[in-house]
Image (tube, rainbow, N blue to C red; front, side, top):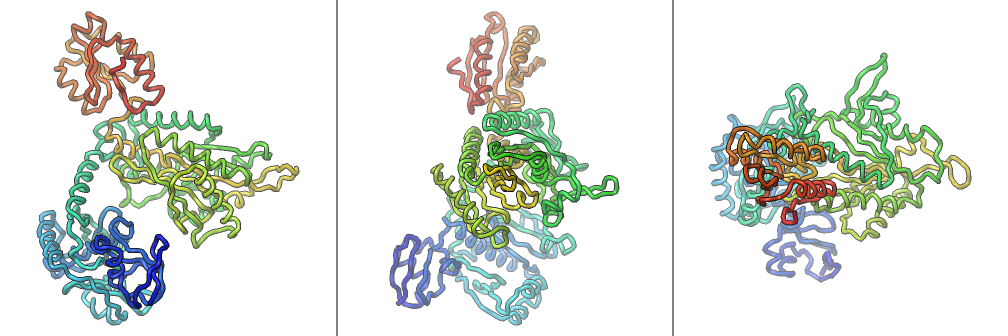
Length: 640
């Protein structure tokens, strides 16, 4: 008999050689139906694996992150099998699971066409109906090369394996080089859909052969697939690149790929976000600085970027010396700190910067505002004594909460600990990690520990925002740094009167990339921004030309009060003007006709469908001003 320990720490005895499926059956019929794989002593294995010694186990289902990856990877095998049945000469390369689904890169004589999807999906359905068992085979590298003798891509992968043993997975007559694990059988993949075709170079190298990549999604139930496709359709409507063009917010040109141009309306949103950032940081005791965009090689060598980050940087020469365009604000901030001797009485010292940084990104990964080559990073560095660390982290967390709650974001928090490659002593890491944990616990927030995923220079807390489509975005980060204070010899005068005390330092970014945050907001709001962020807050629509003088007086009244107002006095129907204003997602529409001119009032219509007549200009202006100043999420006209 062997003893099996479950995640809840309960234990049970089983016969030696028990399989994961048998354990799942012991727990319950429903779990056995949902089970996809098993984790044994931290190692993922097939559900059919036999356990021969005392172990800690966890049954993996689609609810688990690992379960989703296993499920999607199994779906990629089914898709590859279907493609080989339809296109026997196609050569398979790699087919991993990705965040939202799976793909397979394939070398094929002719490019795939969208109409091929139906044939492939029908063949996949037949494979699923057959409910074929996924079987693992352990073979030598020699046997693997023989099995894939007609596929140079697979043979290259076999050559790259360090050991002499390879694993192959089979279902039916199909086999593929794969480390696994996989779901028990093809019948588990009940709902799937192929989504798009793209080009891809073998191993991501443009010097290699170009392949065809087919993407797909898969779920255990058709209901889940339907919900996903609905979200996908909604996400396409909210695509910030599409809305950015339609709403005239930003543009990207062939003359500068990855370098966005912000148009007047986009600059309004960007500046409002910066104004809010500045207000809140002033209240929180931050000092704002600005450091140069170009600095010399000696600085980047000292910071470690020249050695460790060079492939992501841009360079130039000035007076015959090497200079670099900054990819990060931190080294410049270190120079500012070292301009004078600091006393412990000045600490904590909170210094922020809205710094423009440039990073070299491959053209294939550029994506609107989400992945660019130039962006504004809202860095801040906090210098402090060891005793101040916990309170400063709590202060940063409170600041993050104010920001993210304003935009209506839910978020999850992760604590990442020491990675394998790191600097500093175990004692330093234990101390700094304990400080982060203490701050999280004192704030009474839920968080997940990510073992070994910290930065090489220190542990960190990451904030993952969830938008209205339940997509997550990593934005805020709080990092304890033990490297830069050492590299730049940062010091402060302690209570003992000596200047050899080393401050602890927090790196933190709230928006992260201001451009990326804007992209997230555009999609989160679907372009329907709250009043305080809207590029045009009020549009005045005239019923006829003779009402223009009154409309212009209202326009001036609102403009002088700081409201972003626009007048549409064109000789068009009101219904057409309203429709165009709705397409531009202007939140407030004021309509002026004969009745409004006579009564010196306004008719009001909001983007979300509220309508009201007979409102006085002064009462509306008061309501608008209060809403904007307080940065309210919605605008209600009932109380005007």
